[in-house]
Length: 203
Ligand SMILES: Cc1cc2nc3c(=O)[nH]c(=O)nc-3n(C[C@H](O)[C@H](O)[C@H](O)COP(=O)(O)O)c2cc1C
Image 1 (cartoon, protein in one colour):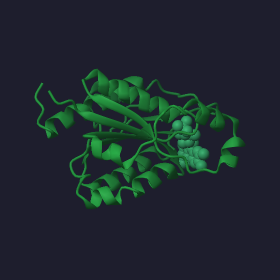
Image 2 (cartoon, rainbow, N blue to C red):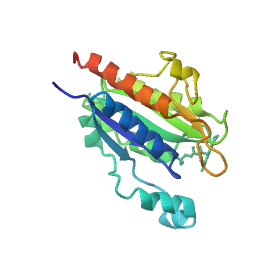
Image 3 (cartoon, helix red, strand yellow):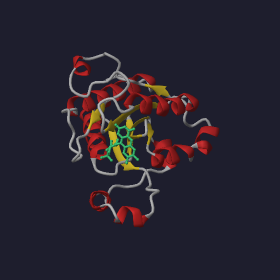
């Protein structure tokens, strides 16, 4: 039987969204998907990264993670995005990656991709939903099928549950404040289940 192909595409400076992406990948694999966890290319100057020990350590620790390409988007039936909230928006690295999808879009190849998104922020009310909604705006232009969690499971009422997409707060040391792993894995499962329906795969 055809497996749903899921690309989990993230940007992270200090590891939070990398962890969210890994959990999403595990959640998708648990329901039979073929998964690629991929980072978007870095844009910041090397000198700036080198001047920030935490950022530099994260870049070094994730050197093995493949970079996302347009071919990965073409390959995927479903895409789960994860980006830090930056001034109430997605990180520019994620936006740059999405701005390179015009060619794929023009060929009609973004149509009916099943998509969902997650974010993190330092402040509990620091713009998480604005970030998710602006990312979803791009998805509407793609003709993608946005699969937000809604209130479709009790996990949404718990830690990190957010009807727009999982969001987590991080403290001053970069540690996640809420235990969001179950919410992330649920969101990934739901994304795969809807992708199966869109692709007419019956278990
Ligand atoms: C330039 C910049 C802008 C940020 N803007 C916000 C913001 O608007 N709201 C907020 O709560 N946190 C903000 N933060 C904190 C980040 O969201 C937080 O560090 C990030 O979610 C951690 O994710 P990561 O570990 O994957 O890099 C900002 C951080 C930076 C560096």
